[in-house]
Image (cartoon, rainbow, N blue to C red; front, side, top):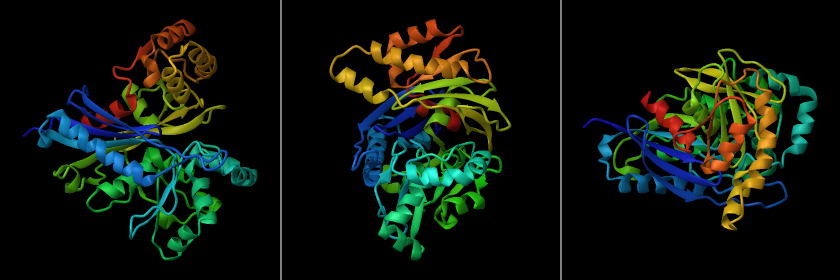
Length: 386
């Protein structure tokens, strides 16, 4: 039987989607399930790794069974995910050593301030990123310094670290593969984006042992074979990519290609080419290209998914939120190093016609609405199929 379809798992921050695409990257069916977050202290944001896993498996099963597509016609699974969120677990039992510390969490402010004084320039030069609470390294450091169970597991050589993709891959592959892709690795502050490898110098700065890290491989690779217990077939995992980079793949990866994802946060990104560049007010990052990468710049606005959901729940107008958002987005787009010929937009908020109209009247180039608003999932389908 010909493998005409791909299955995509999108593990976000507010929910998890599983989608089936056909060979032309058209959406066949999508299933969605909400996720919980907890806020134990001011600035702390946590999720339950077991919930991330169980709900991922649930939506994979649901979309496969409800699609009516013969399982053997699905050629591969791909994963895209919230980035930077940090999970440490026991490789013998699979039990998390601590809840997942979410990318939004700011508990490591003091660690970041202390380490920035001496190491800021060195870290930016290797990673394209500042030392910030947003990224994984200080979250790992915090757990190792504050969670006695994690320290004991490290002493026994039983501790593993992963971003959300690694945690899911380890749990759903039959060989418990401990892997990540270049894009997720690039958001940890531990990965040299020029050499595409974990950096001893960066690991030393954050005092993190290399042996707990997953192996980093290209986004379009075989990451393992799905456990038969999930779908009953040995489905290969053929692509893994951080959510924003995946949305960039969906929008296009030519030099100057530009996209904005309007999700839990708002993320403008532009591809700058085959060499990394540092641009003021932007983060340098990578996007997949074949077995290697291209470089891109990215920015983030902490808005507006939650506010949009709240407004919709209360039947309020979205116009004030969208107006506020565009005031923040406009200067970022105007400051991009390459003037866009067009900007592709995706994410849930793009379902609002008012957003598209407002963006179109703000800029003197076309605003292209992605064919489906789940640009993050679409990018993975394209990685698998193209």
